[in-house]
Image (cartoon, rainbow, N blue to C red; front, side, top):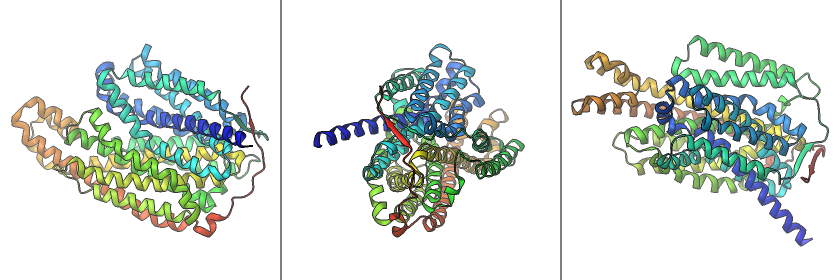
Length: 518
């Protein structure tokens, strides 16, 4: 019996390692190309709009398809879907090695996003199906911590690669990592819903349309404005598709997602908390990477190294936070974590052009601690609120919440930053020569490029533009902090306390069948 237990423990550790490494790769891929965009533009001749879709094509495909992909894992096998997704991810990431035009790069990133959609829910549902309930919360907590740190790891890895090689090395490294993880995936046990219900095609279509339209609106809003016809029309489509999804899911015999789960306090509050965390985290990443590079003059590698310390408290606290939630209920860690994040963001809003790296670091560490405290219990609550045979769909809800939150957070932070910069730089524009007025008014990055070409006499303009950027960043982080603190109140009230946390979710039919790979 002891040897059997030991072998099971080794198998669980291996499964957890592969699942965490895979989700880290998928999340890292979202952020890894941020620091390489200038080099991609120079090497491929990509326009600013094309550069935007190099990033957003991946995010859009992942967000649209992650929920239907979770259902495929439940029906056809989570390991099988994981392997297929990793193959698609690896093959698509290798595209620029042979075809490096902007169009092919965008297409490759979009297909990689499709592969990532297949991968993400499978990584979590394999853990929840393969671990006994007594060990599941810690495993889910570690997975959530690694997923939360994935963006920082992606920025760090890309910065290291760009020090020695070209931007193609980033995607090649992702392709090789995906291929190795695909091979490792064959060693994992399979798990599948033995009932194998029919695929809910209408549910898949309406959910993909709702999420995809919302993400498109969020992507377009910072550049076009929130009242632009495209932004408004796609937002309306998102609302209509979401309503259609709810109607469809309440009428079909085997829904893609039982929407009544959102009325359960753990599932609903957990989904809201995950969405909010990724909204503020990715919005803050957008601001702070630019702050480090444009105000402090850091390169890609130094920017990545500057953000790397926040990984430590995030992962460490995520590993133990689910145990705290079991003792205190979800309310304390979820609401407490959000309050900590909000306080850290308000502290970040005090940064100015003379702030040092240490002035930025300590709020970052506080923010990552709050994220670790909140993320893991929220993820565990989403999973615990669903039957075992539907864990892939539950994992997909968790993943979709992350993607939507990230897209909306970048949109909100970028819009407030742009508005703040424009309002502060506007008084100086009449004194700026007409030929450089437009780039100076657009962004700090463009203003610094122009003033560098003009020479030392443009130094006062560069300083004024830096001050305008910092003002926009201050307003953006302050808004995110206030939003987080306000949202923490209803989420904390909604989240179950200690007595409800101890209550078990509705009993699930034992329809998840683990099998050993042959």
